[in-house]
Image (tube, rainbow, N blue to C red; front, side, top):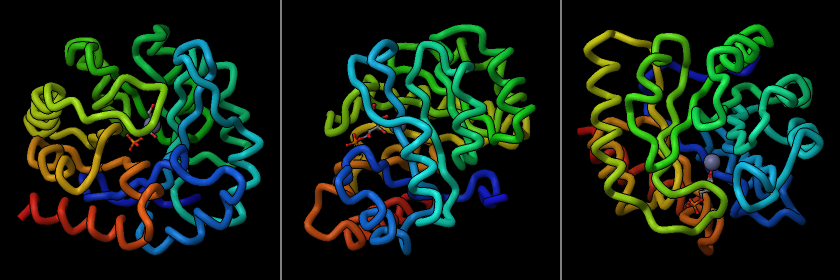
Length: 227
Ligand code: DX5
Ligand code: ZN
């Protein structure tokens, strides 16, 4: 089993959505030294207006990385595919609270031995995810509307990140708080300052001339905000 690491530790999770799909294995290997988790964006063309990748790609990538595979399921019916992702080599699966059936999805993911994540869109209030915080390992707060990489960070979500962190600390929960969308060296410190500890970044890593240097810069910026 791939270790996810301690709850609350700072983690950089490069999103392969922004990588060259024709050379994914090479891209993943290239960024390995600065990868804590590898973020894999799954889009079904229904929950979000875009289609990306599915279990076969996860399976193909698995031999090229020993990192934690953090699968973000932007799908209307994620329950149908949890087992396929698990068998393909996913370590964690995150489902969206907006699709409903959350309790059952969490139980199914848990039964499969997956680390369990719950995601909320920018306009979904904290109250929607609050009842589940004790049952999940990861809360993903989207800082853009899901569906596409390269969008601008929505600073309004920072308040929700702070709310989540306050509740995690108050209740002493074992929970990671992840942000996804528009994270770069200038927005990462804001998210970390508000209480996020897992940073997903696509464009700010893979669209740069040297992804490894870009990821290192991102980590340094994030660490600065934790001092
Ligand atoms: C958006 C995805 C993100 C995306 C982030 O729907 O969930 O993971 O890849 O891309 P950037 O970092 O470019 O905003
Ligand atoms: Zn994502």
